[in-house]
Length: 284
Ligand code: AMP
Ligand code: ZN
Ligand code: FE
Ligand code: FE
Image 1 (cartoon, protein in one colour):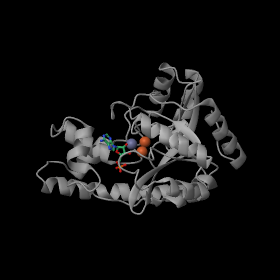
Image 2: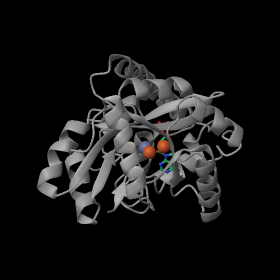
Image 3: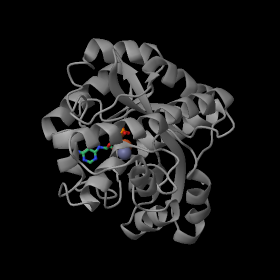
């Protein structure tokens, strides 16, 4: 069984439609794939509908933009119900913040001498329910200012960068509670990626476990082998489920191909059991 529990479609900042993503997941030999777009569940019906024809199982999820101490942390909610009012209201609040900063980022870029308008960014985002910095990066690529998303992030739009604008993010413990309220399983995404290691030390991870955190994403491209071994040890010590996943974004992110990291059957079974116990939505 090959299981990938963290992917993005063009409903947020990936490049595949949800149906294309499911077909691509089946093509590379995955048996289970979770769609976890940023701060929206809008792609899940299409992804689930594509499952049977492709001979693959789909798990619905979301990647919530959260924060601790004003620093960005991502939380996956797997198996959440789409009819949970409080979760939907919170995701809508985050998306309003995403929409609101588009004009502000365009203004910063213009001040820096880049010909990028709010309309350019919104056109790039097309049908995405969640507009993000990767769409800004794609405009910069299309206009020839940078070679790829990675260069746009490295030079202009990284956290605190010259064209960066912050936005509302959900307090992490609120995110965990909302995922549970919606029947889902909470997974801390890439906990030691991109400089968040110092923030999420063992004591903090233990307090998050006490606050209800169910799992941590151990096998992720942002973690080297030593980091994976250390996080795996901590997960075992704290009684947290361990996951592995690609964080696939289609052609938007290199080195994150579907199935590049996978989750064990034991972990998936534990996750599905929790979703069932909480009244969430299991595999389709
Ligand atoms: P935002 O959601 O607008 O805060 O933008 C952050 C998102 O951009 C992350 O969730 C990643 O998917 C993506 N991202 C961050 N850094 C990079 C990078 N160096 N290259 C490509 N995508 C990135
Ligand atoms: Zn993303
Ligand atoms: Fe993430
Ligand atoms: Fe992600």
